[in-house]
Image (cartoon, rainbow, N blue to C red; front, side, top):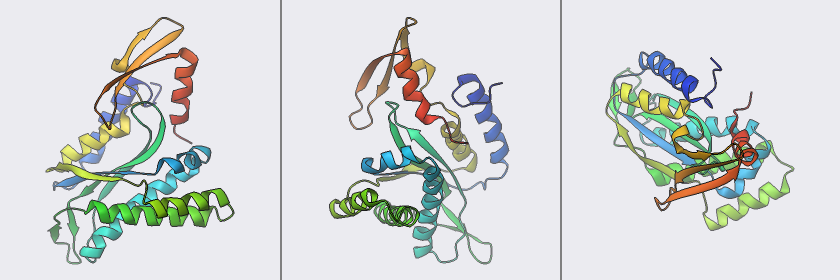
Length: 231
């Protein structure tokens, strides 16, 4: 086994093993799937310094904890989260997939279910915490500071999607497992390869339109390389 999610066979085995392991640890309660994105103006910063992807993960989890804690003090929630760097077109578009319990345990270890997580409030907290951490980590990066100031003035980026709901923990594990294990592009999306050039398709997120991309083999490899997880 090559043990990489870039391989359809090994990625599937890796995902199944992970789901079996983590499903024994999840509470059999409702879960929410959240997706947290960043403004496109910040993508190059994360592309140039992959260590910041780990910062994204930690800040996303903290943002969710804080927003839930604002309404439900001392409530302990459970979370599983992962960072993806690729969009459907294989562009570098880092974002966070996070599955959280739709509720938590209070100080007496009683289960308390919540109505949900307000997307607007989470988006604002996510933007504030991430930009604050970027400023702290890169105090001498004037270009980054100017970009962040401009994003605040125009209220751009940092979209949060909170619509997905799973009534049982096992369903949530299977769902996030697919995100953990699948490669940047499914082999079923590769429609043509003649040894020199390759064609693949994707469905555009904003419009739902079917898009075809034709590139050389080397260009295709160059699209994949930025998504190799950092060590």
